[in-house]
Image 1: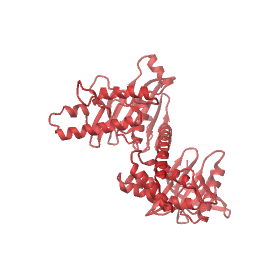
Image 2: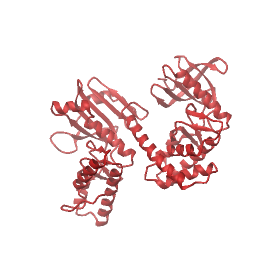
Image 3: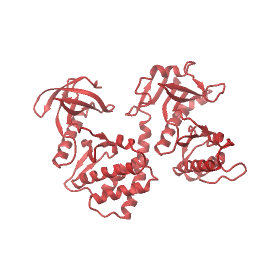
Image 4: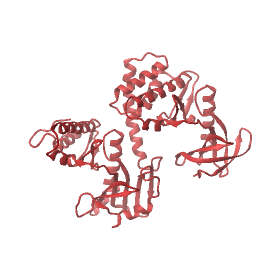
Amino acid sequence: MTTPSAPLLLRRVFPHRRDETIQCTHLLRSVPGKREVLDARWNDQPVVVKIFFHPCQARRHLRREWRGLNAVMARELTSQKPLFYGRTDAGRWALVVEKIVDSRPATDVFAGLPEGPERVELLKNVCRELATYHDRGVLQRDMHLGNFLLKGERAFMLDSGQMTFRSRPVTREEGISQVALLGGILQDDDEDSLRSLCRAYLEARGYRPSDADEAAMMSLHGRYRKAAVLRGLKKTLRTSKRYRRVEGQAYRAVYERAFFEDADLGPWLERLNGPAGAGEDAKRGKAPSVFTLEWNAKKMVVRRYRERGRIRAILPAFETSRAKRGWVNGHLLRMLGIGTPRPVCCVEFHRGCLVRESFLILECIEGNTLAETLRDPDLPARRREALLHQVRQRVHRLHEHRIVHGDLKQAHILVSAQGPVLTDLDRMKVCRWDFPFKIRRDKDLKRLNLDGPGKEPARV
């Protein structure tokens, strides 16, 4: 890994062979085993350095990126200007491009905007720039919002190595497919926003939008959104930009980099299953199966799952442990826009190949359970009805995706300032078949019992 804030010695290969010294300032992005992208300065000029690490394909990746950048410039499209490439003193291939000053990643701008029209308008601007690329025969094979930079109203497409260049414009159908990929950052139920993106793109290309175009957009978005969620869940279990996977002598863990400020958690994780690791008991029981801890003044809730007996310890060798199921299910609900506490770490302690104990660590959300809230005699009737309506909406959205909680009851719904959130997700399942889904859904609703004892639960 390249050390930021250190001078990088680069032997330029093309154009003009000579040695260059580049001052790297900080790491912008890292794709483990493939490449690093660093912010740097060269001859008092702000630049971006891409260093390629693939053991066999690094030179091919570099040349593909170089050719792509030059092809984009030749078509007079907005992009980073390529300067030169060469090899570092460590033998790595590196590409230096001009930095677009005062630009920001589109994903960062999107995340900083409130949900609503402002986010949709940002995506429309990106769609209009995308239409310009398509008119000139440029197709991005890795289409997502993270491959765009924004500077004011202008959008710059990145990752030229994944672009294909044609002698004719991109077809209408392929263009709608690309817009559906770009709109994958929006939820499935935001149909009006998705349709407006389709219209903005087609109008920018001079086409007249039709109902068939919008129907195709909605169908493709649902398919791409599902694939994106599955890819995202896989990333939560390995080292990536957002997560880090670590292994010790007796444990395996994965945690969120941002929450723990990219710290090395190894020593802390080893102490977690000892007496010093147990914090304040959140359930006030004898066994601290749920307790709270703090990390840099941030409060966390820790759920401990003990695998009692050899049979129950052997089962996770063939399927995921309860902590890992809670970790994956928590991320799944958050990707689908369903409220649940933020999972920040998952740890499994093992003896040989058997899981002995596992921990799921969540960001602490203050609030009472739904059961405690509804028992409050001072709860206004209007507030009670609004709360029950929110809960029914959450459960309806859960079942829309053919997901059953498995242990849905009022004690497992937390009423927070952001609304109701679902907890205890280790029994949650995604059902593929109608018959078992309907049976489990009805059990969920009967167990939740929002309509009171002795009443048939309404299917939400």
